[in-house]
Length: 540
Image (cartoon, rainbow, N blue to C red; front, side, top):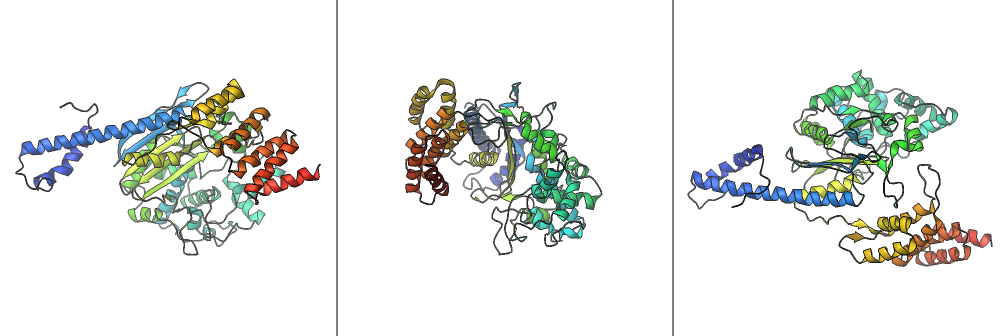
């Protein structure tokens, strides 16, 4: 019999043998046989072969999945999959630095963004275990300058405090002092001075916002007597053995180009771009995070290996007691008796789909990056995904869990909108349309999405410019793309509305009016179309 190419590690063999041998000896697995030692060894060998084959199949499927994602410009980064604490798949794809073509590696560090919030939450829960606070306590009990007496620590942990974003408090100060650098020290005085009403009563609803964790970081500092970074280092990173995880605020992450062994965030600024831009070269991004040098919600740089150590420290109760973790992993109940709409617990979010068991997770995202740590606590499985080109890591992680557990996951397909956009940029309209028609027939490898094609049109139109970059208007390409979208999706009111907007932008008013009328025929409640037609008629 030919042995599989990959064999189980010796420790995995021991684990399997120690689990199955007692059952074999007790005639549980083979009750009708008189079992000899030779028989047991033969059965164990067959089981090892089966396990090897299964492991190879999972690796093959994950390799195919990520190779296709990377080839489709939809993944660049690191992935680690662990089953019962043991790594079963770990690979790197793409570049840590696209301009220099420095590859991502298994040991490279990357920003973990809002996964950092789980460190903050763990710190708060540790202080609760020490009797220094209760999560049901009002925040004001420990931070007298906090102007909202009805908000509790639990409200902050679970993102249902009703607090407005921090910009609501700090932007008025920025208008008067445009060169001011804001830190956590400025937040409470700004809140007290601003006298801004809550968005809703605490516990009434839920909305994810960084402001909650800025306040929690202040609480850690007040009650521990340490700086936030020192507390996280001494009470979380050091006990977990996380030697490659460091405090690096966003203000530094996006304003330095000298970090070594670091995966820089990148961004495809347009759907038609073949290479992404390095985010620390975008002036608006640099300026924003230099101004808002806040901490507590997205400040750490780590590796997939260190995050696995964090995962193991949680499983082994090194950081928190089991009963505390149990509470943290349950979605909070709102004042109306319903569960938090996003199923947030105390610092963690709970996956809605329970077909594979209970999975808790936290995602992280910033300009040019996306990451997630997913922990199936029913099966003791962990998926850690980091992407430095802003792909949805949580969606990827969910599929990886499915592959790990034998679910059928469709291999990633290539976006026709992306290929068409790049083709029209390089080869012109006619060549791009010919390619488009060819790819539409290959439904096994390509897909066409209305929203993506619509976004491509706006990318060419140059109106969508969230990063305040120099404007680029490619009107002919925009018109051709919007027309094509309307042809492909003739029952969609939005395709005609977008085409009308593009026609109006280039001064083709009558054609624009006709498109808006088509849109309104499909959706009489299209307010943008109604207003556009009214403006056209008014200016005739």
